[in-house]
Image 1 (tube, rainbow, N blue to C red):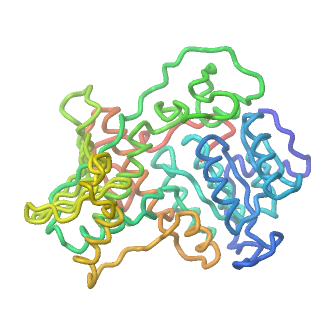
Image 2: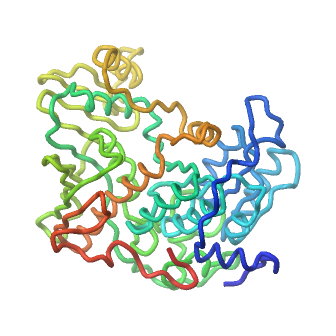
Image 3: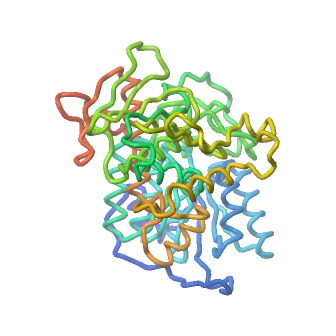
Length: 450
């Protein structure tokens, strides 16, 4: 892999690429407030400037941050984003790098955003944590279970703040849904159903001619090098989401894409943020793309199937929640409801009826004096920035992000190997003679390792 790194950084970059020893606890170099001058704001570097990275950059630029550098293996993307940042600040100060280790090496950068493909999440995350930087990383937090465990260790060892981009927890409908469940409003929970896409599969894309301006070797990184295909990393400014998510070598399938969001809410509603399932059961049909189940202690199941989004079933009622949709059913009667179908129909002719209205109605009626109150975040990125200042755990901390990702990885392993797996969520290992420790990790292409 070619690099334009300076000679005096060689030792650091070697360490970063191999994810070396932990750095001591370091607070951000700046402390900022509501009216802080630009020179005193939290300084940030952005790694991975695809569609999601560009979208979230806009949000960070308009908050109490100072973006000093951007990184992408695509020349067009990184130069375009550099120009965007420079225009925002009215200068030419934003650096544009091909290699993420240039950002890690900069001591003037307090925090990093990571919006790379999944197979590149853990390595820059760990390098950043160990260099004393806080991290905002997109979901799923890691590409495999071993990486999730290493991130958990690194956050604690280095005293850093990490936010996972599972932003549904910062939306009111999901919090209220989980509070209803956690406070027993729908009775004892019997099962949960979550709707998301297909499990991961091996990449079978044909070879295409490589396109200039893309560092394909670095894009592949810790994954096996394979012939270029534009579906994995289309050149230039992205209009949609590339297909790398589909494939085992780079992504986590639909299970890790939308599953990371919806399983995260299932975990929250079940009070499993510091634990997880004890078993995963594949569908009877070896070719099925739905039907696998996570089993929790006590027998509650979370099943992967097509449906509403997240659907909690209790002995006294049901809670259904998705983005901008919310339904509460008690004793067979729908007491609050706003769905996509109602939206299309004009919410039964009542202009004041919206998702927010129905959520608030349920919250006032059933949660006013509820003993369990969940973390309230009004805006996901703001929550991260506030926690960087306070040094508190954000709403989707490493504990939340890692354990929700592990749910996705267990589902994928069960589908891929068509195996019934028993799991110890405390020790992060297969038990009862099931599974294979090799399934917890991957073979990393040198020089990359976790």
